Image (cartoon, rainbow, N blue to C red):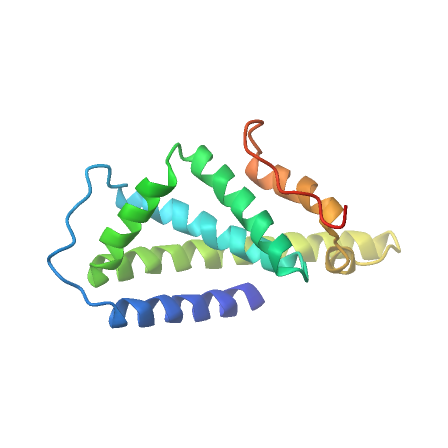
Length: 171
């Protein structure tokens, strides 16, 4: 539920930006424009990465940024795109409020579905832990440190070997 409320705030923020950005006919369709479907998938994954990084509770903003940039690079490799392609496509779509609004409605649906799925998994894991008289899984996640971040992220994002990894914190 917390993820959905954060996500709703993000959607609101994006729409404010869209409304304040002056939409003009000067924005040309880039040659390497990502399809709406692919852009929706990428933006959904970007928001999931942002959520993951925020949930890591890393207090150092430089470390937060390093983890985010590492995951963003992995994401671009996953979709076989470069930063310029993503940014050009993003600029094109944001200049078209109707299309961009429809895209974000789909992103919100996916986010809500993922949130409900993760909540169910957490509840199931907590019930199992309670039956075994273990501490609830939520408490374990709350104490996650940077050392365990790699294992969590690798499980979700399957890190390619050739992506530069962030510098270790505190060494």
